[in-house]
Amino acid sequence: MRLTADDRIIVFHDADALRICGSPLKVGQTRWAELSRLSVGEHPIPTLESLFMLVGGRVPLLLEVKIEKDLWRWKHAFGPALRGYPGPFGVMSFDPRIVKILKENMPDVRRGLVIRDSLSPLRRLLAIWLADPQFIAVERTALGKPWVNRARARMPVYSWTITSAEQRAQAAVQADALIWEGDGRPRN
Picture 1 (cartoon, one colour):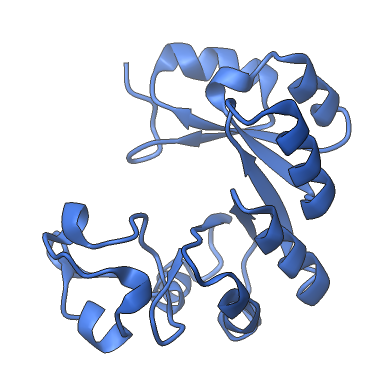
Picture 2 (picture 1 turned 180 degrees about the vertical axis):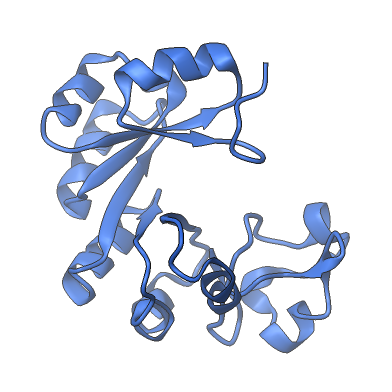
């Protein structure tokens, strides 16, 4: 998820629309009215509201917040966007401050911290302390490491990005939930 210049939450991975839409527009610097004219394949870029309407609470959602220079704008964007959705969902981010903002302002929202395997032990410890997450999502290559095993004794551990049946077999033993790429099915 990313914030547009006018604080609309869109379901979009990249900071700009070049790779996915062929447009150089920067998401965080562009208003929704202009971004809404772009398409992903044959469909418009989805807003969080349109995703919620499509899913309708039928399946759990795991939403990742991507931060640019808009950290403090998220505090006010979360409430209107997340309140009232009837289905189960969790919100996670690489930025521990987002997780802290959720804890302080929407404590009923399930929140997680995404952690790269390359993060130094001190930065990892500080991020987990600041975020106080209910789950962590670790890079697949971190699975089996002592720090992940210790964390798993305290909270669920999710793992990303699983792209093959072999990775799935390993991760299924060392993680509580798997985050797959593509259509949700591991590829060989």
